[in-house]
Length: 66
Image (cartoon, rainbow, N blue to C red):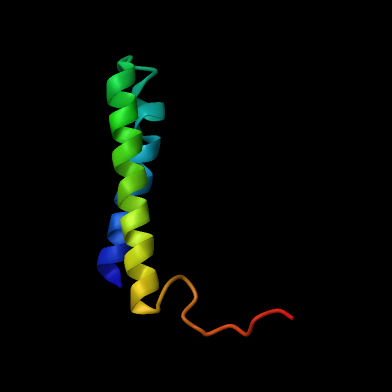
């Protein structure tokens, strides 16, 4: 469970990194896209792994709303 949370945190940092870097050093569009794409990929991988393990943010099983 801890590995998935680390992947999720790194993904979030990569997605938002160019917003912090851009005011000081303008990045080309290629690097902005690379950071965003890599970050989103890591987030998706982390969420898939969390779902496969049956855990997640809330570990209790919830009843469906009828």
